[in-house]
Image (cartoon, rainbow, N blue to C red; front, side, top):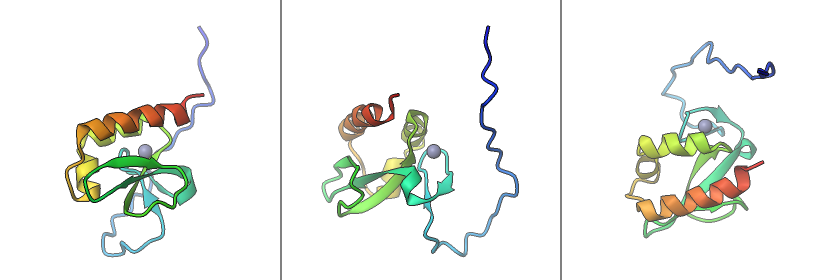
Length: 109
Ligand SMILES: [Zn+2]
């Protein structure tokens, strides 16, 4: 059996807990909480009616939230009800299911 040796170990060493400085340009993944540049995430936008969709252009209006390009993070976000929290409104599960499909399309290799 072959084992992957090149597995990246991203241990969260040196955790910072400054909640006072929230005005950072960094984006944070709704699923795993990882922070990073906007370009490393997939943007998700919700409109007034609680419809959430993938914003691949990064230019759609509305409140945006971010996820790593990893279906696992979408799953985590779902479990944590991060969608409703991030968008400050209920996001219908139907739209999350749609999102999931689109997400699969862009993350599959
Ligand atoms: Zn993530």
